[in-house]
Structure formats: structure tokens, C-alpha cells
Length: 381
Image (cartoon, rainbow, N blue to C red; front, side, top):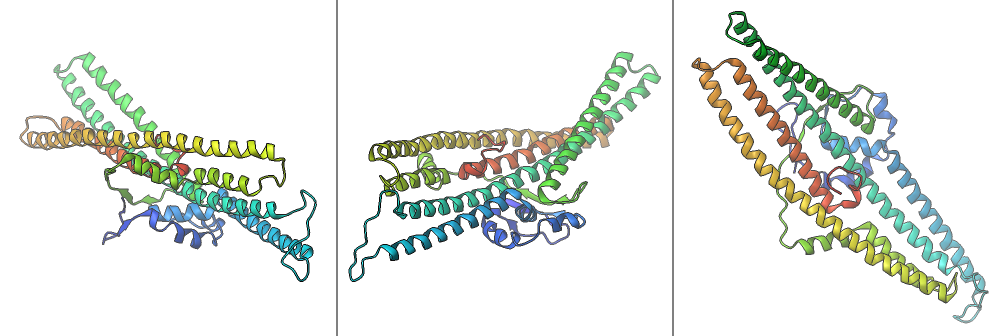
């Protein structure tokens, strides 16, 4: 479940992307994508905002839309030609039609144009889902990179405090030179990790800005988060079968079989079309088998992430408890502030890992139910 944290109270409602995709497409495809680039970047972007922007600026989606219009036009023209053919070959006073030479009957073209149009519809739907998938990936990349950069910055602060305390002790002979050198090396390593984390955040922001059509250098505040909701499936095989039935790839394979039957012998010899039909039927079985294996892997991927979440949750809880104890001990003068900062850095790092895992799990669940949209993603498919 996706939640949106608004910039000002009260908090906004829960965001569920799947419920507004169709409405967003109808609204945004009429907008000029260049409008976003010509304006100053927004200060706050929710996940649903990002989806709207990406759909409005996606060249691939526009290509799919143009192709759909093209196939619709071709289908209409084919039907017009077919109706003209029927009028020309109709025998007056009867319900009979004159025979034509082999290859001149346009009936097969009608079947083919209808298939092409419906296939283009499926391609368009897949492209919409693919854009949403990419938005999830780019949006979550910024959110998680930001958390990692914050944790890295806190780690640098902790290492700086440790070094300062070590230098003070060394001045009075209370710290060895080797330990002092180790502290300096640790600080250098922490600063290097911070630089890498900041570079990763910069790239994530740049990728998101490009996807959404925002001006270069835009760094809007991303306020949407995700809840961790375990995937509950009573019967895995039945759930997988339902996804297979909804698959555009399987639909195309099955419709190809129907098309081969409808045009059987119209363009090729019966012997050739017999082979074509057999190959089309085999393609259906292969598509189903391949998708079943991919979905089984996707389901296992989700469950592995859920197991990791439980382990990480326990680690975070233990770290938070240790931090609370450390803060109390610091107030009593039993430990130094550097030790508290170190524990705060550990908690921040675990929280960043937790946030990343939540996004990965949310995307993995979506990849299980819409694998055709996530085949290029990084969630196990």
C-alpha cells in the first residue's frame, strides 16, 4: 500500500496507484508533455503526481497510442473494402455471392485487421503498466538513496566526533597513535561512503527528472511512502493461473491460434496452414509454461523479501533499544557522545534499509501480478 505524506497537515489519504491509472491516462495524454519541461519544477511530488507526469511525457506510450490509432484506421478501411466486395459479388435476388479466384477473398484480411487492432490495444495497456512500473522504480530509487545519504552523513558526524575525542585523549597520552590513525582512516572511509551516497542520490534525482519531464537539476520533495503488507495467497497455483489468464502474451498466443483457424487455407495451402496452426498451438503451451515458472520465481522472491523484513525488523528494534539505553548512559556520564552518535548512525542505516525493503517488496508484489510490465525491472523477473 502506498501512502502519501503531504507537505502540510492534515495528512493526505492513502494512494493506490492501480485504481487511478485509467483515469490518469485519459486526463494526461491530452496534455503536451513539453509543458512540464517549460515550467519550474514542482516543490512536492507524490507518487500519483509522478505517474501522471510520466504518462504525459512518455514517448513509448505515445507511440503505442499512435499505433493503436493506426490499427483502428486500418481495420475500418479493411471493413469498408470488405463491404464493397460483398456488394460487388452479391447475386441480385438471392442470398448468394459470386465465387472469386483464390487469394482475392478479403475475409482473411478482416480477421487479420481485427486481430492487429486488439493486439495494439493490449500493447497500449502493457505500455501504460510499464510506465507505472518505471515510475515506481525511479521514485523509490530517490527515496531510498536519500535515506542512505542521510545515514551516511550521520555516520560521518559520528566518525568526526570519535576522532575529536581520540585526538583529545592522544594529546594527554590517553590514546595510542595506532588507534588515532584508525580513527582517521575510519573517518576518511565514512566520507568516501557519503560522497558515493550523494552521487547515487544525484543520479536518482536526475533519472526521475528525465522520466517526469522536469527541468534538469529538479529535486522535488517526494512525500509518498509504502506500507509493508505481506502477500497472502491461499492457493499459489490457482493465483498463478489467474495471472496467466490475464497475461497479454498468453492472450496474443491464443488469439493467434484463433486467427490461424479463421484464415486456414485462405493464403497458404492446407498443408502449410496445418503446420502454422500446430506451431501456434505449441506457442500457447510454451507461453503458459514459461510464465508459470517466472511467476513461481516471482512469488518466491516476494516471500524471501518478507523473511528478510522480519529479520531486519528485529535488528532495528534491538538497535533502537540499544540507542535509548546509550542516551541514558550518556546523560549519566557513563559513555561519550561519540558512542551515542555511532548508535544513531546504526539506527539510521537500518531504517534506510527498512525503507528500501518496503519499496522492493511493494514492487515485487506488483511484479507478481503484472510481470509483463516489470520484465525490465530489478525485482526478480
